[in-house]
Image 1: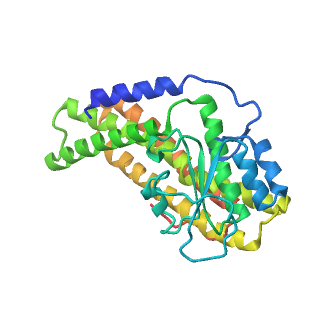
Image 2: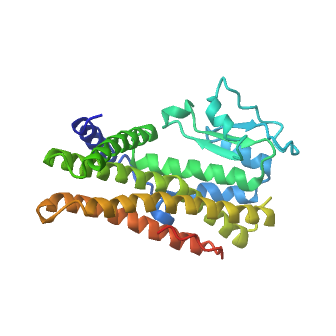
Length: 306
C-alpha cells in the first residue's frame, strides 16, 4: 500500500474512532487508562465454576471447551467442544502450545465468530474463567466509545509496518534518503506504524498484566470462590512474561525513534514533531508498563531491554 492510500486509510480510522458512540458511565478506569465495568465482574467472585459460566453465557457470550493435552480432570463436561467447523484451526492450535483460555471478539474478522466467544481448556479453573471474561468487559467498554472493528486496527498496523520497512530498507541500501519524498514517506509511515503498535501493546500484552493485577487484588481482598495459591504462582510467571514481551516490543519502537531522529535536521521541524509525539507515547507506555508490573507485588525485576 502506498503512503497516500495508507494515509487515507488511517485518516478514516482516526475520524471513525474520534466519534463517541456513548459514554460508559459506570466504567472504572484502571491501569493504562483502560475502562471496565467492574459491577459486572464482581458478582462472579462468590459463584462456583458452573455458575460463573452460566452467568457469562447469559450475556450472549458463547463458551466452548478445548481438549487439554495433559489429560487433566475435566471440570466443564457440560460445555460443547470447539471444533474446526466453528473456530479456525489456528486458534485451536494455540491450546496445544500452552494456552489455557482465549477471548475472541466478533469485532475481529480473523476470529470468524458471530458473537463474543470464550475458549477454555476442559480442565479450566475459576481464575481463568474470570480472566477471559475480563477481556470481554474491556472489549465491551471500548466498543461503547469506538466503533472501529479490531480487525481494522490490525489491517492499518500491517499496512503501515510494510510501508515503513520498505522505505527503511531503501534508506539502508542507499545510506541516505533518495529524496524529500522518500524522507517524508519513511517518517510518516513509521509514525503511523508506531501509533498502531502502541495501541496494540496497550490492548494485548499490557491488558493481560492489567487483568492479572486485578485478579491478584481480588485474591487478597475478596478471597473469591475457587481461587488458590497455585493461581498466584501461575500468575507470577504469566505477568512477568507478558510484561517482558511488551517491554521488548516498545524497546524496538524506541530504537527506531532514535535512529530516525538522527536522519533529520533543523529543516525537518514538522517531521521531527510528528516523530517526537509518537516516540513520547511509546516511551511513556514503556515506563508505565514497568510501574504497573512493579505494583503487582512481584519481586523479580524485568530484564533490562536497553
